[in-house]
Length: 205
Ligand SMILES: [Fe+2]
Image (cartoon, rainbow, N blue to C red; front, side):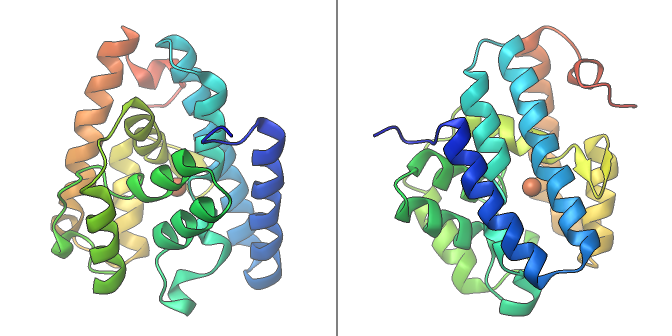
């Protein structure tokens, strides 16, 4: 069994997450979830094609990276990266499980103080699991593409970080790991693709 789903299996899982969001969240959240996840998938596909990664794998990882938003973490208190990780391990897609976790932590050895909106238990679990894993180009790719979609807009990572700060009521000093990761990953894929990723994805900068 492959460690990641086929396109049709991925769409089935994505629809499952979307129908749960449809039942529990306002319409705006559903629209943003659709726009964000399909946008990350599409961007990951384009970058993967340009730098000789597997574009289909990149697409399904992008589509499912936020599966854990099947529940509202502000209501349950349970971090989406843990919920997504557990579900994907349960169905046998360990590559997706890793992405569900790694996309939230561009710097693997992150500081808890950079993630004050999450509980210590979930952060400890994330750190423990990630300490046994190495990041590969797919982890870096989804981390980067996740930075380009804010609400219903495709944006630069700088704008996305401003949005994260606003949404979680954070100061920029609390998203240092995310910002540092975005800078490193953007430069990494600019070099790998031999172009500015913003031009490839039609992002204004
Ligand atoms: Fe995301």
